Amino acid sequence: MNIIIEYLVFLIATIFVEFLALFLFLKKKPFQVLFYSILINSFSLPLATYFYQNILNNFVFTEIIVFLIESILLIKLLSLKYSKAFLMSLVANFVTSLISFYIKVFT
Amino acid sequence: MKKYLILAIILSLILIQNVNADILPYGRRYIESCYQISNADNFQEYIFILDEQISRPKKLDLNDCFAVNKNGEATIFAIKKDLFDENEFNEKFDKYTYNYEDKINYFKKPELKNSDLNLRIYPLPKSNDPLRKTVIILNIKELNENSFTIRKEKILFTYEDGTSEEKNFISQDIWPEPSKKALLPWWFAEFWFAILPFLALIIMIGIFIYKRKR
Image (cartoon, rainbow over all chains, first blue to last red; front, side, top):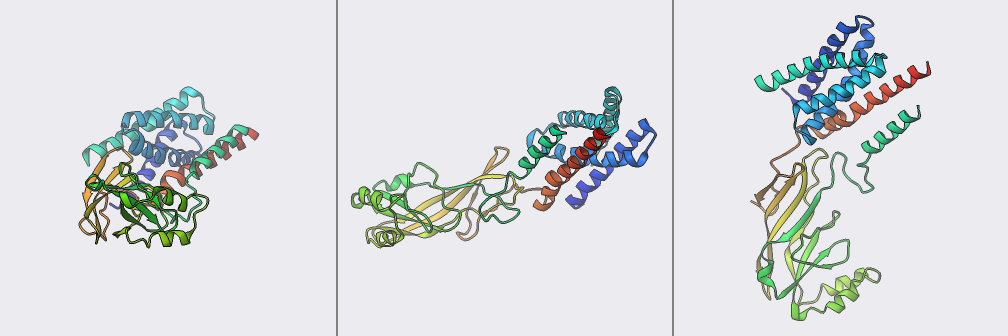
């Protein structure tokens, strides 16, 4: 697959999977949650890719940083409690990490 | 609100740090690039002078890697040590008094042998290429009363991750290509790594400010 399409497909897939995970927790305002998922992932995924490719080639550490940044963004955007935001971010990022790990290892 | 504004300014400054006053082709960047003569020790009776089109000539220290100006060609001249007048050279090519006509006349001297090779900087890599530095190794093939022949022998590429590789020149007119190249086209890399996260952040800051005001 063309590398540009590969990057874009991965972004769209991440947005969609994280949206589903967030929406399962919130169960309200699907369009707002989708919009925030687009914003959060458009910010975190490119920077995480850069960090992983150029700064520290460590998948777990990169995912931890992404989880922390996304938690803070969720708190700010959705006015959530810290515990709920951290849990949502943990679940959303765990699912996307599993998928990317699967793609990395098995494809 | 103030802290979001400060954050936005800092991010803008980071993202536009590559603005360059020179005429740098869009999507390209400057890297460190220099030349080194591999067998200069065999010609210790000579002084080597680098003459560049748009700057003052300079005496080469052959232990150092020397750079050429990015906007033009350069030629190496050789002169026997006993024929070289260092005071005259320093006087003529003084930073403040140097003039172009003096240079033209100086290089007409018969004791100065000019090499057959024109030196240029290594072609500018794409802005997202992982190349950090190039060292071009020159080899003096012949230096005597009648001729001064230099050949580009090999090139040492150093990458951003600290690794390096060496490639030989197959032809004098064709630059060897580095093996490591950017995965993404430069325009997509700029969009992906800078524009997209920056836009997302700006919109999120806008939302934070809006929510706070409400």
